[in-house]
Amino acid sequence: VLILAQPLDTVVDVPVVLPVEALTSGNATAEPIESPADALALLIYTSGTTGRPKGVMLDHANVQAMCAMVIDAFDLTAADRSLLVLPLFHVNGIVVSTLSPLLVGASTTVAGRFSAHTFFDRLERSGATYFSAVPTIYTM
Image (cartoon, rainbow, N blue to C red; front, side, top):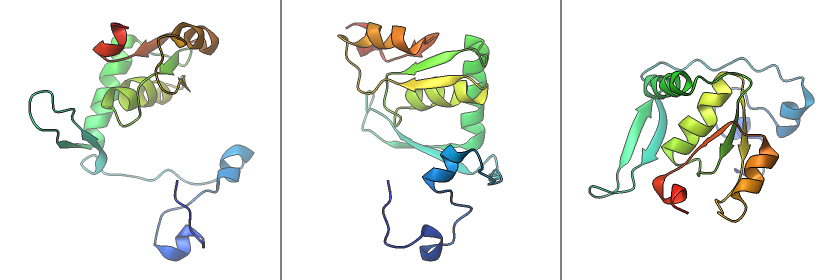
């Protein structure tokens, strides 16, 4: 969240900026922003399992390829519902549980911080058809 005393487009030169109200009104008219395939899309940090943690730069082609593999492997369709149990700074959370389902017109429910005590209730209430997690969560 960025809070400014004046409109963002008066502070820096940016593409179309939509106020939150425009996103919920159904009248948004912003055109998609074109990004080259080799432009930086995400900067993901590794956990440092095999060494020091480091930033990994993923371009749009990387992200598109990962999403395509997830969509194909899970046979995702618009009828699917993902339950997001990982933080969005985790590549699994953003690619597997968020971007991939959204690309096929499916939906994602954000569960918030994972809790083994509330997981099955959240799973049932969300109507999720799948979720993806890390090994630590599967052992809980």
